[in-house]
Image (tube, rainbow, N blue to C red; front, side):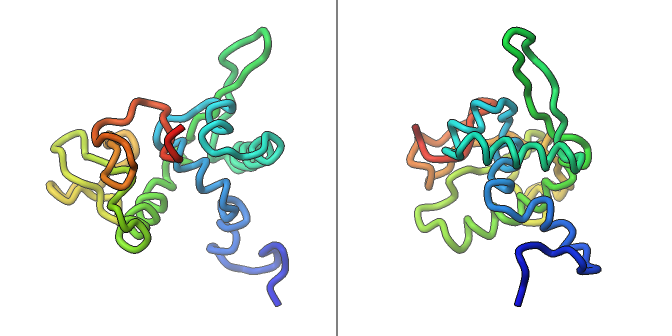
Length: 165
């Protein structure tokens, strides 16, 4: 029987799941790639309880995936930015996004990543389907897709992919 954690397993997948395997964590990462940086915005778009969000963000900061940076002194407020290590998870999120678009999005993709350089789409391997270039989060523009229930077009920075509110 599988325990509540993966400790004791000599496996890179298990070690990675210890950090990012919780469902809220993957959604936080999704929203971070869409430009969300502030605690309040993560909480509002995800609908997650503040104590759970704080714990997940602390885990991501502790693992070096996100950096906590102050943006206001009175009262103290922080933003959460992806580090180089965190940006390295972009292909993982791209693969989950494309799989979900293909298999569990009957109305079409809710969001689309468009290569800012040539207008091509994002493959499951985080490549441009038009020019073949490997893409990172800095190379894409996010657009609402047909499955979003919103008018198709660019997503403004920090707007998360969750339900329309």
